[in-house]
Amino acid sequence: MSAGDTGAPKARGFLAEKDQFQRREAAQEAMYIRQQEMEKIERLRRKMKESQKHMDELDKHLEEYAKSQGGEQN
Image (cartoon, rainbow, N blue to C red; front, side, top):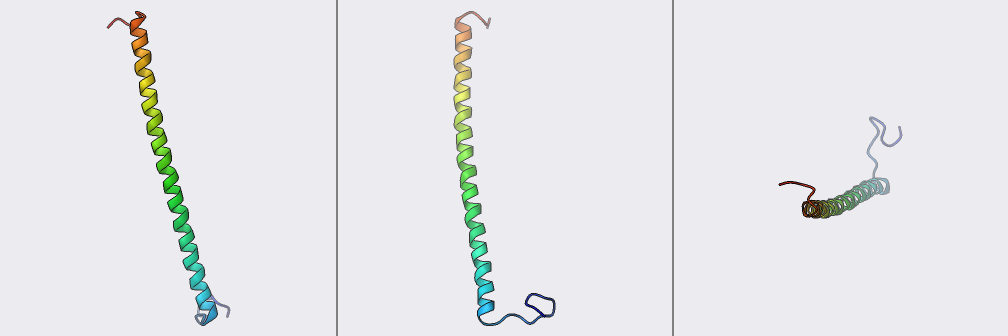
């Protein structure tokens, strides 16, 4: 039986440590990637809010301009 087969004895010594190291390293990499993705998402959210605020300001200016030109009767 090879390592990992059902009923195979657990690896001991260097192989067992290597497997634990690989699992730990993979978990750390996954956590790092997730953290990077969360930071990207947060930056995108901030940028979206800034863009929305800018769009709202432009809409306000357009409304003021239209009113001053007599385009709307309010």
